[in-house]
Amino acid sequence: MIWQDLVIATAQIFFIVALIPSLTTKDKPALTTSAMNMTLVWIVAVTQFTLHLWFSTITAFAIGVGHMTLTIQKARINRLEKTASAFSDSR
Image 1 (cartoon, rainbow, N blue to C red):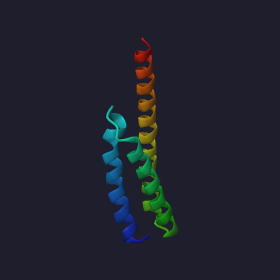
Image 2 (cartoon, helix red, strand yellow):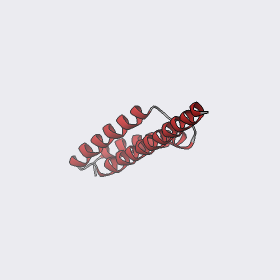
Image 3 (cartoon, rainbow, N blue to C red):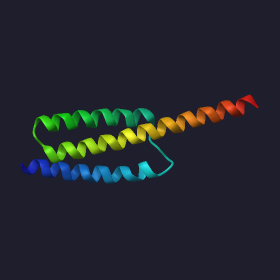
Image 4 (tube, helix red, strand yellow):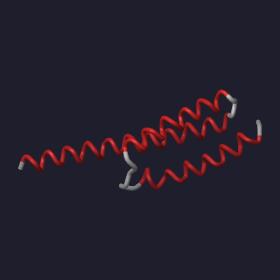
């Protein structure tokens, strides 16, 4: 194990912790923001994997899962708002 793996993984753990409020509250980032972050972080995870930075790979993948969850949550919110809007327009 190289020290850079631990430093990167530690920093990424703080990114995971920083995602928790967004995951647990009603306010969500824009759908495109979460989807783009998910994609880019997973690209970083694959890159870290090829460099054998195992802890960094795991934590980057976890960040990507967090952004994937935000993407799904925002998509559901958008769908519900669209349905509610359509329902109120039909009255």
